Length: 442
Image (cartoon, rainbow, N blue to C red; front, side, top):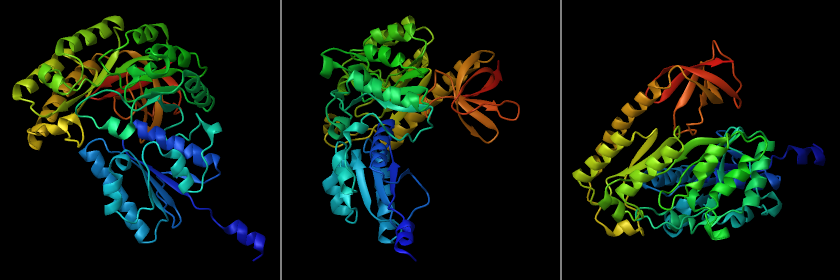
C-alpha cells in the first residue's frame, strides 16, 4: 500500500453525543455539536453503531431522582463499554456532573473527564477542538429541522425551595436580543419554521441586561424573522408575569396561542413553603386574566405531588382546582428531596406510594378534561405542522401543542399525503384522550 493510500484509509475518531434530560440539554448538545463540526470533527448524536475509537460525550440531567438515576446508569453503561474496549474515551458533562463531580469521579474512575454546565471551552479542548466565537448562534439540530428549541437565557434567580437548578445552572443570564435574532435567522435559512422559546424562566428575560423585562420586545423581533411561522413560549413563571407578552400574542399571527406555565401547587400553605412568591387567589386571578386577554389560548402547567407537609386537605384543594380550571395540558410529578435546596431541611414525610397515587389521581382528572376538550375540536379545521410519518400515519401538531409533551394529530397516510416539515390544514374527524385524528383539506 502506498503511503498516500494508507493515510486515506485511516478513520478519524468520532464524537458520539448522548443527551439526557430536558430541552435545555438538547440545546446545549446542539451547540457542542456545532462547535465540533466547525472544528472538522466527525460528530453524531446517539449513534447506535459504536466504534472502538468513539469519544462518548454524555450530557447529563441532575434535576430529580429518576433523571439522576438515568444519567448514572448511562455513565456506567458507557464506562463498561470503554473497559471492554468497545469505545474510546468517555466524557461527562451537564447538570449531574456540575452538581456531583467529586462524588461521581471518586466512584466511577474510568471516565476520562468531567465537566459542568458552563465548561464548553474546556470540554472542547479535552477532545482536541477549539472554541470558535464566530460560530455563536450556530448548532447542529438533533430535532427535525423544521422546529428548534431556542434558549434565550441560562440559569435562574428564583428562590423555589424544591429546585436545584440554580445550583447546577447558576444565576439568570439573558442573551442579547441581537444575538438571538441572528441565531433565528440562521435557523430560518436552514429550514426551521418553529421556534420553541426555552429558559428556566422566560418571563425574567432582559432584567439583567436591560433593567426591565424584555420578553415582549424579543418576541416582536423574532416574529419579524422571515421564514419563522410559529413561535412558542415554554416555562413562564407566574410571579411578576409580564402581561405585555399577551398583547404581542394577539398582534402577531406567527406567535402561537400557547403558554407553558409551571404552577406547581395551589394550596397557600404549599405555595408559601415552596417559596413561589404567589398565593392561591393570585394564581387563579392570573390564569383568568390570561384567558380573558387571549380567549383561545392553550395553557399547559406542571404540578408537584407529595411536597413535604402536603396534607390530604392540600391535595384535595389541588384536585378541585385542576377540575375547575380545566388546563388544556398538564403534567404532574412526585416531589424529589434534593440536597442543598431549601426544602431539604424539611422532613420528606409523604410516603412514596402516596406521592405516586396522588400523581395518578391528578392525571386521571386531567385525562377526562383532555378528552372533553378534544371532543370539542371534532369538526373543526386547524393548521397542522407535520412532524413525521410513522407507520400508517402522518403525525403533526396544532399551534396548541408542543412536541413530545402534548397532543398529536394523526392523519391516515393511505388516503392523505403530506411532507414532514410542512403545514397542512386538517379537519378533525375524531378525538381520543390525547390524540386527534384528521383529514387534510384544501
